[in-house]
Length: 316
Ligand SMILES: [Zn+2]
Image (cartoon, rainbow, N blue to C red; front, side):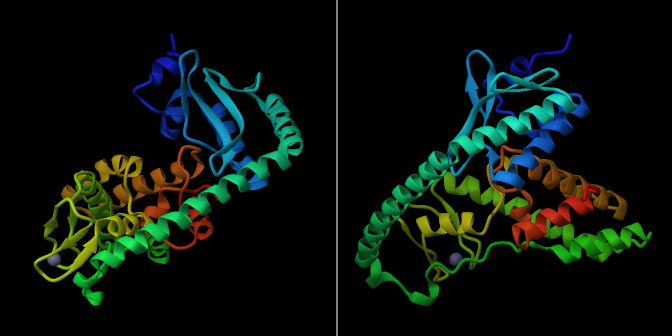
């Protein structure tokens, strides 16, 4: 007998899109993906991070900026249930679209108002924080050497045109080993430092971008023997601003990291790159991630990256 979703993904295992793909039959999974694309395109709504409930296990929410329009979406063996409507075929899918349209129209004003209030509160908090940090900076300013302070250099992202080129050549039967190596290595370094630097920061440590030394300590200001200086807080911000892969993204790519080190042949490398691309594509249609994972690795606007990943994954 098939396991229930609650059994498949217990409390200790927050599901990702891959878990849904495994749990459902292909046609249900496709309906769910179609639905998540639809609400994104039409209403700019996304699936939020799943929420655990004692009765139903992991449930889903739809919303924007942390404000939710629909909650408690349940996952069952042959479909998903949105406010009592079970979606499992074309007909029920059509019904759910009508339903979403209806509640979106009914609640749109209040919904957008809540988002704007939330953003306003956030802006107020930001203002207070900036003032506080300005004061803190004033107290360390005498120690700062401006051109050595907070000079960040994260591993490069992949140029999207190179990836495209690799696929084009491969489709023509041309094995460009140099290009495959370059692309793989770029992805590899991004994965590796994303994972390692995130672990360091968890232990209040950072890696100097000038010389690679590890810098610990309690104070926010970190002085490296090579001369570079960092604010721990700004270092962490820069890490996120640069979209370095961390958390769920880094976990998913542990396999790539391990296997790339031992990949010897062009074919082996292409397979690894392609598997990673498949992960990118999955994360794009997943509600669970707010930003597609591809953005951690590939340079370009979100729209452009999405489009390219869909194309390369054979799903334009
Ligand atoms: Zn250094």
